[in-house]
Length: 56
Image (cartoon, rainbow, N blue to C red):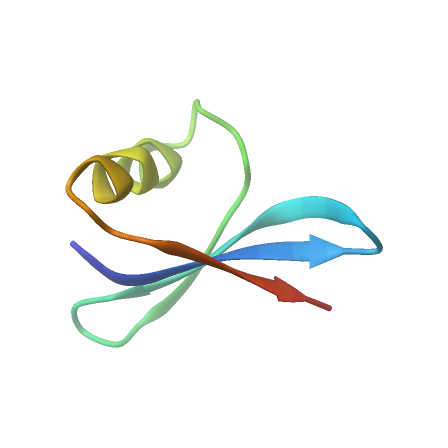
């Protein structure tokens, strides 16, 4: 499961997500519903998780 989900904004456009999992590993996830980790982000939110934003 995920500990933290951060939406990455690059030049005003969303470019994907940075996800920290329970082992503190960082994953870079594209905004593509075909990606299993992207589906897990929606489950994280449904379970009460919050997505923060980071501008790069």
